[in-house]
Length: 399
Image (cartoon, rainbow, N blue to C red; front, top):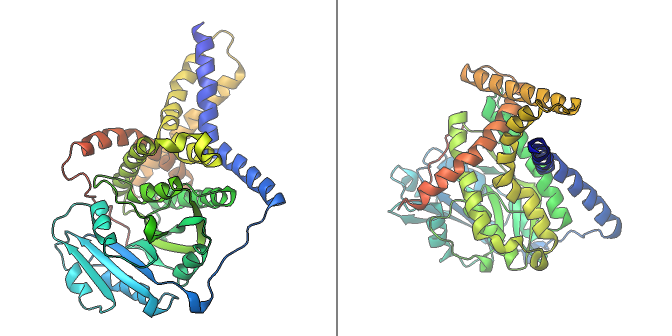
């Protein structure tokens, strides 16, 4: 009886893990192909004379090292300068960020002396923004030349409320585990986001670059950990779509080390778990239809069940080896798991020794990413009891 239960759990867990990381991509690709046999969407764009005013909003904390580079990037973007407003909200910065910004007449600075976190900073800044479109971007990310124009054109469709730009990780010659793993992860994520958008709607936007109709902004609780995701998904709850535009992208360096990347991943995981609870109305397919399927498949499983199922597969598989009726299949799968975790452990060791090998960095990053989802539960509990829970600790980036 016990082996029958273990076999049942094994197959359920294996299916969920496979579906989350591979199967959904296959199903999504197939559904998009079928949809496009019957319906092809037309691209929208504004004529040059009717372009709306846009605010480029940058929330910053102690970013003196990148102020000049970011401003040079902003003022050279393909968009009429008279219609592009650059606003920085510097949340409790105590370095020379404000001093450096003072040298740029194109920048409007909103300074909040008390550090309350990015979400509080955005809530404060959005009170004074009156352009019809707001584009959010980070201080340490650089935008491609026509990013603003691409995103604005996509918002001409009245059914679209948010535009998700693409995040690109700059690959270094001496790439570390963080760079290899994060770069590959974001390439795969970009593919899924593109397919999600083509099917119906992307499942959230990344804070490095996204745009919204300003009127749709809804103030968020200051302790919100994943402000970009919460903000964009609330727009979906209002009946709008999120369109993914890979031709508008932000580039940034990978995290300086896996320790720095761990800070980021744990916070994202905690924010994701928190968001799943706060956005639970989206789990109702009778109200949100196909989007509920997309949301559960792409986001909810990754932040809830799948990491636990992944790590439970190994001990369950081991127990099944003692079943007298054990099939060769279970032994082969167990061997594959051992090899996978061995490669992951080797990747961990090599990054400690600062040795480069992308073959082992990828499985290491995959295990690392799922472990941090579990760690995110503890982080979320601590942050909810932290008075300054909205303040974020920046992950250092490779230079």
